[in-house]
Length: 342
Length: 284
Image 1 (cartoon, each protein chain N blue to C red):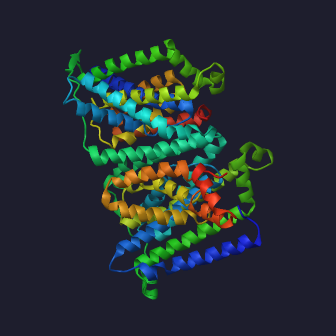
Image 2: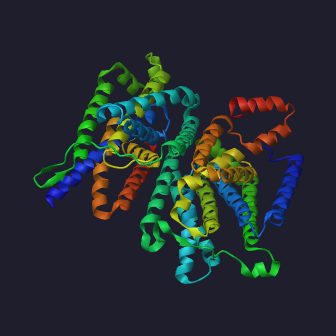
Image 3: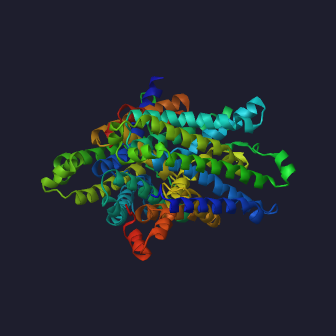
């Protein structure tokens, strides 16, 4: 990975500028008040890109595989929406509360996992079990959550800004998510370039050696876990708003976790723009397959299997190393041949 | 009150024995090769579908059930020779992770195909009449399940204790390197046990369908139940898994009757989480 070097830094800045210029232009180019489904598609891309970036921090950097992203998003969404309704205030105010509750829940799980020295598979199973419990509780606590029929939610809008700027509500939503995306990207870049990045590398390569050299593994894992689940909990309400109704099935393992995993691996684990590229590709495919019913499940199953067997490097890191390489053809051959270049 | 208790206990035992069979499907493959088979439920559902399709052609549920188990075994063999061989090439934690994702992908793939071509709900009629013992009504399906599962446990016990292959399997579970030194070829044992685990899950699925409707969507639910049972039982202990299945079956049946079905499912997952927090080192 190119963490130093003037060349790499210039390229990073150039990429950042191009990506954000393109993203800023999206609403002007594609959003059309008459056909909202295109706007919603872009909003979904941003939401899933942010989910994947959150997973990238906790799984990519500290090897903690969490499989309750749907559940965490639900914790954020239900806390935000229900507290706002109960208190009769705007969900903008309770948005941070939802994210905080999700983050605290996530960090407790990560704390127990780190203290009890869970291997990656134990944490995966424990979080998966929590995902199931959250789904069951959301359906079961009918009096509070309104069960499997859910409730309408679209309180995260900014009518005043719409009036001042003359932009549509979808464009405003897109920009709000773009701001969160930028913030998360900033946090990720800062983490990676600071001493935390070094410590994460150490934990990933050899946790016991890292501990021996004085890295506080438990604290760092909880820290990464908190950031990630906070982000997922923050975006959860926006995710609920995309369909206009908050229902448990929206936050199921198959609707969130499977997609996020595919997005992250396809885009590229531990890359800055991998999640965005992966989300764009997968949400596009998802929409293409939307009319073919269960073929969608078949396609994603096939994609997940093939990706993990043959293409664990991901799009963004593969392109980056093609760009760096003197002999790109040999590189393609090695990527396709072994699936893993390390 | 007492009669109701006996009814719950018998139903719980039947349910628990099915859970044990499914749990064994996970335990055998994970204990042996470190692959957490997330497509186990698909095997169970395919067996039920094949069985119910065969019922129109062959005489009797037993023959049809056997047909379902054989079909699943062949399917599992094909998968083992193709996709799983790629997973077994990896070692240690890489294999564990790759195993999770590849079997998850395969599970979605085949679940989707089942939805496209064989959607619908399947139910198998055991044909055993219900009886009343001392005021407690015992359903025919529960009796059929308990008897068939009992026979299967006997066979499984015999296999692991009295056949060369069974003992070799336990050796590989304990120590892969040691097994190689004793002249056992782990990959071959892994193949045979994968097929065996699929057949056990298939039998578990067919017994499950005697008492509940099975749809392609059941695959995911059956897989998660199987994983939880296997974890509570200690993941690489065959006896532990059987015991855990039976205990959990009785617990969730009683909890379901007392507090409603949603809390009984929550109980199952909560117990699994508690066991993992208490003894995380059993899975490594």
